[in-house]
Length: 198
Image (cartoon, rainbow, N blue to C red):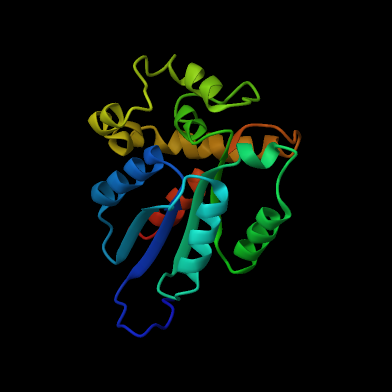
């Protein structure tokens, strides 16, 4: 049920606070491709591409009461380091307690893309390792904006989306066995958005 605001709200509004350019282009295209009646998807880049600012932006936006659902889409590789500030830990807790949802990936968003093709067999320690596996399926994969825009990422991966969601759920079960297992919770925001399709 939509939150009460000082304006008439005729549909469900989902805000995605994004860490990077790849995520921005992917979800911007999803909004254009899916065009689900009664739902507005707002993909918004954080002011700075780091976890602290993603969470801070999401918390600020959530406090406006304008959105029905607020998601943070980010990489959790920074959370695996030993020098996480108490300020960041506190912010994570505040976001969770306020109902903000996380579509996080370890070590990088590209795990979500890889899941469209295979179940990751390794614990990837960084984005480059994931991309190396992804190149086996997409030989010209690149982080360059020009390449991403030319591929129309959401359309490109959509035909394999159900497989990626299934593998993501299977991977989530395995994740509990290893603290450093790679995973992606991007499927959760995809499912929430697509659940509004009739």
